[in-house]
Image (cartoon, rainbow, N blue to C red; front, side, top):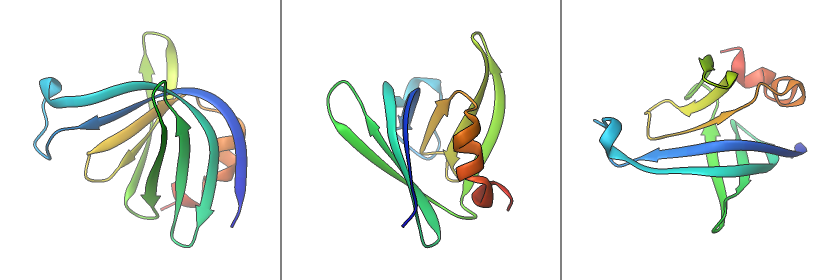
Length: 105
């Protein structure tokens, strides 16, 4: 298993339902992405929130990568295809290189 140690500040968001609206956002939490690990068919973001450690799993072909523009500049959104959860982070070069194979689908 390949691993990338990081210390990137990000925002993790998960929602209440598949048919979510802005008011359905359950949890919008500042996190620090401590590590990214690759596994067969996907990758895991290992994050530390103010309250707990979180691991979110993403699968190849079921993950959306979008570069977006916000009030603080450009950021990368890594989103599970069903829209249930996503992470917004600065477009870090080492992360982009590490996850390149998942972004090419």
